[in-house]
Length: 255
Figure (cartoon, rainbow, N blue to C red):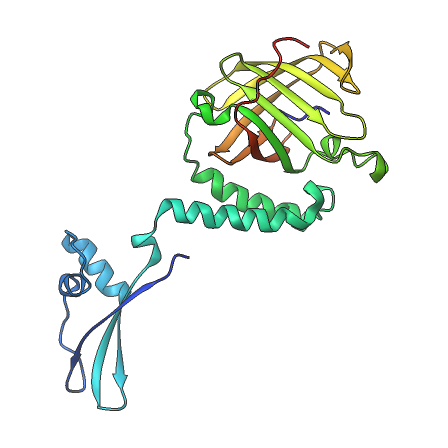
């Protein structure tokens, strides 16, 4: 069980102009009419005017109406965008049995959403953040060893967990029923996002300690982190997506 370690478009209708063609319209006027208080450069103004102003004929009274649509990107809230991406990610992985039922196309789709979140990671230095601390539940992975797909389904763990404490640089992976196996590890920071992992003790059935071999090593990079979701990537390219369960959980000091 070596777990390496839209927004709505705002539309503003401007004044109705008589005649067959509308006069030039300055974007500043439209922003003022919309209740906006922006200071726009001439270049930006021209860009918005060219890209956002559309004119159309009002057939009922032969007058022209100018509509201005402000692109969502102009007013977007980063928090709302992240929440939408997170919802999309959770919906995509929900039917995949933590990844065990994922097809190559499913894996590609999940990876694409994950990369969008990673590019907007709100925690730039995860190893310096208290958000990393605690017990996390694995909700998706591409790691076949973690999914235990080589076992009959009845003998696979029902859930997998990972705990990390940055103050002690300790980590712990845990399986649920039927075997309750565990493994603990020491972490060595390689930078503010990535650690080297050295497993020290396995616990068979959660009770019997077995010293890990010297070859039980790996690396883990935390690529996205917030209060409830973590995305990590292992040294073999595997993707891990976890949700927070218990931020107060402490990893045992040894074994």
